Image 1: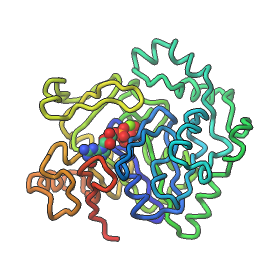
Image 2 (image 1 turned 90 degrees about the vertical axis):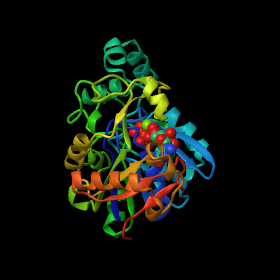
Image 3 (image 1 turned 30 degrees about the vertical axis):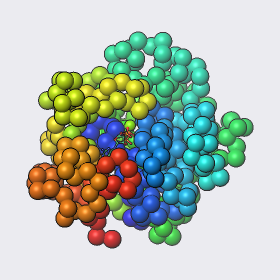
Image 4 (image 1 turned 180 degrees about the vertical axis):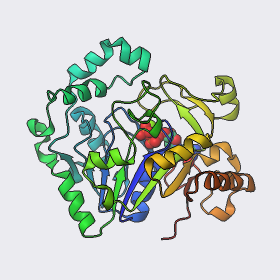
Length: 335
Ligand code: GTP
Ligand code: MG
């Protein structure tokens, strides 16, 4: 903090929802602002015993005093947004940038009919790819053209810029992951935009000199949903045995998985300019760490793994997830 950007270091679903909601509670940002592609990312937030599945509302919502913003780079589906605002009770503190492009039903229908996207690439059928291409054609409609969004409209870059100018804490929430970036990922098996830290900043209108910290989030193993290469992929049977089998939040599809990949991690640190690393699901690989909240109480094996990540990447591992709940977090930052 004051301006911290959180991004995914693998293929998405690293548990950014967990991390961002933890940071929103702990660092009390005045603003939590979301960058990324749009409602094709699903985050799960488990807070005080309740589980929320979110695709549009920033995961920082768990802190009732943070303003929630969606940057102009993000594609907005007003129906999804409206449902999630009701679910989270955040209508009075949520702002959408005037220039967010809007996903309409026709975009979703067109994507469903597009075999290249749905079968070859394995997209989420949420209309983002089509809407993004319409935006490039300058045909997509933007938020200010929709009366039902009028009460939420705002100038996100200005709100964020003013808060940073006053040295207030701002939390920037990225979505997806480094290796499904349109530029830096495993093309063509990628999402519709770049999603590395500089792109996330561009989505919300923050210049590179305004950022204090970039936290890259890894899972203790690698997962991938949809098509595309995944080195050292384990069989579904092996995943069941290890307890690593996950299902997608948006699509419900089983996620493929592989052991932690140091080579990918090192490159993700470079591509994102990471100053800190967070690792979630430590408890899945090291069950004895389940629910642990202090570094000293983590097992020797898990600490050896953390040391190895630090020595391979040269960046400190400051935050660890030890269970699905926001409270299950080890925080080693020097605050
Ligand atoms: P994307 O923006 O789609 O990349 O989402 P995400 O990074 O927010 O991750 P997502 O919520 O899709 O997946 C993470 C899953 O792991 C969720 O089911 C979380 O509840 C769970 N989870 C997150 N952190 C931890 C952790 O430290 N331990 C355990 N056991 N589960 C976790
Ligand atoms: Mg997800």
